[in-house]
Image 1 (tube, rainbow, N blue to C red):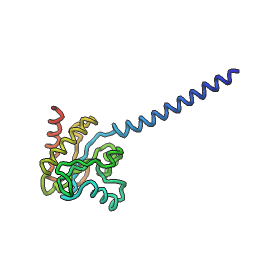
Image 2: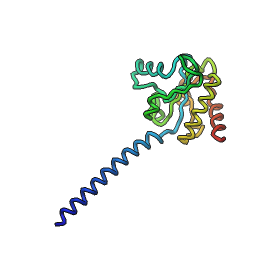
Image 3: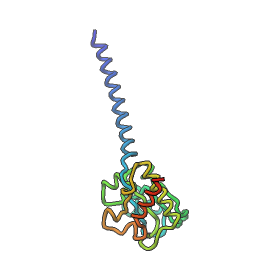
Image 4: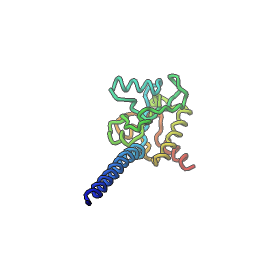
Length: 181
């Protein structure tokens, strides 16, 4: 007669185990997507025109990527945008990895931020720079990313990006100053 209660106990145990495993997978995936961030990588578009939609289209059509390479776009006022306006890509909304460097690890654990403009030729606008600092402070606080892990693309590979007119040391200092407030 014990086979009936044993069988029910086993079925309950297996059901409980399946529910726990499903919750672990769901919560583990959410935690990974939300808490994996270790770096913030700064880029420039090397062009003074464009916005998120322009670069999304460019990256999809020319590179075959599913979306723009970056999580955030900091606009300079061109292409019907407001100087300092920040646009969030679908990569960020879905917490997907970016395509902003040749380093797969950094693309997986790095938040990619691009400044619209050719920062090799000129500095970002004041509003654009202030928005960048504000965004970096918010991300650094939210994901516990210290200023020393805010890096320019050129600090990862052979490139001029994000341009000579974006002083990464000063940017890290400005972010650190705001974080200390």
